[in-house]
Amino acid sequence: MTLENYIRDIQGFPKEGILFKDITPLLNDANATKECVKILVNGLEGKQIDKVIGVESRGFLFGMLLAQELNAGFIPVRKPNKLPYETISASYDLEYGSDTLEIHVDAIQKGDRILIHDDVLATGGTAKAVCELVERLGGEIVQLNFLMELTFLNGREKIKEYPIFSAIKY
Image 1 (cartoon, one colour):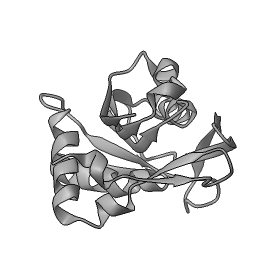
Image 2 (spheres, one colour):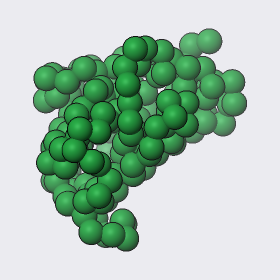
Image 3 (tube, one colour):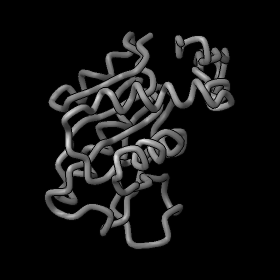
Image 4 (cartoon, helix red, strand yellow):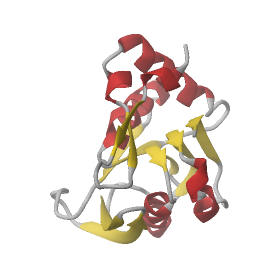
């Protein structure tokens, strides 16, 4: 099975000049979703994971499935004012603007081994912000996992000090 066959290109979303990689066809196919989880888990062989972070919002989808497969806790990292408890935040730039992410202050205990999962590695700004949050709370980043990587945007450079796995590279 080729996962790329389940990714749809949407021109001009969320704004003109962006070619958006839509994962909804992948999510709509149970076998493709299972294969994707299998590929993402295989990239973690021999690594102990205590908690999986899913980055808002598409990172929640496979992040939760990965946490379940790895028998790990799940931590949502969200945009401002979406989490109900006390949070810390980090701001970042993306290819079409800037944003901020938040995490609960008690989500990570010192020494927790963390897998960060998001749907796409683009410019690396989002991933770098999440790494900052994890380290501020005392977590140890085991790996960053991505369903897709847009290699032409060189996002890997911003997070090169961490192990990175991408299931699909464009």
